[in-house]
Image (cartoon, rainbow over all chains, first blue to last red; front, side, top):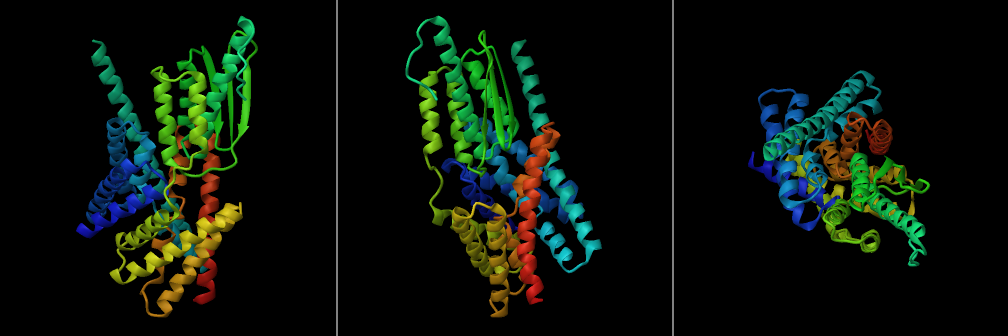
Length: 146
Length: 264
């Protein structure tokens, strides 16, 4: 578990550097990625399917990213990019491709469908989190006006 | 382009002012889009800059390959389109333009100052040194092996295979302007080195090494952004990005496939 967290932190920070995030955001990128991966593997460890697990993890990744974006006055995409990288179904996509290559189309299509679902779940998690954030902002604005 | 000639007469200066505002907005949009910002954010920022300078109505239409921007004034509507040829990911530039836009909103910069600042951002190269980028890619590759429940034996092989692949990708991408080829050849090298490492007893599972090492090339971000754009109602951008992502995935997959077919 400890190594999983360490690795996800390093991988997310590494991707942050590859995507050229500002220097003072690298640590935060790693942190969001680590939290996302922690949530994901906790759910998958409880025999939850990868799709809902990715959804929940990416929801929290985006939530933390919104908080960081507000704190550090940096666009939210900077943190989301690093945060979702561990969740991206790269391994699944590879497996799908591999089965295509050996003419095992049944398995390949199944895996490809799974890739699309997981990618969709990640995106839906981010969108939900954005909606959540907007509603929160509206409510706060309304309170301030009162 | 912005001319330094101040307008003669009221109408002319008004027109000049509007054209200058348009140029600032377009430049900001161009930098953001080329750095991989979401299309809706680009549209939003451009319109926001325009309204900060007191333009009554501005419209922007952004797709991943072009920006069309219109400023509506008393005089004939001013519209301009620019093409976006290069798309990469440079989050630092997005953050910098975002800062400028924020400062414009608070009234810190005049139109001309903002244009100068944006020009400097466009020219500047704020990316990390190449060796740091490659190091980051190698570390990420190695870490992914462990995250995907691989063995520690495959940690170092993935470290080197990922490094070889990413270095090659960065190197060839400068000469060949066909993304597909860069990605294809990079994943070819990754699979080749993975097979080679395992053959010589350095590393155990080819699959795990390859998965970890291709992660720096995988278009996970593009796929997710594409679906996000689709859900936000930006259908054109969503489909364009989706096509780009599928093409990249295809390039990586076929590169690996060639080697696997040859050596298995």
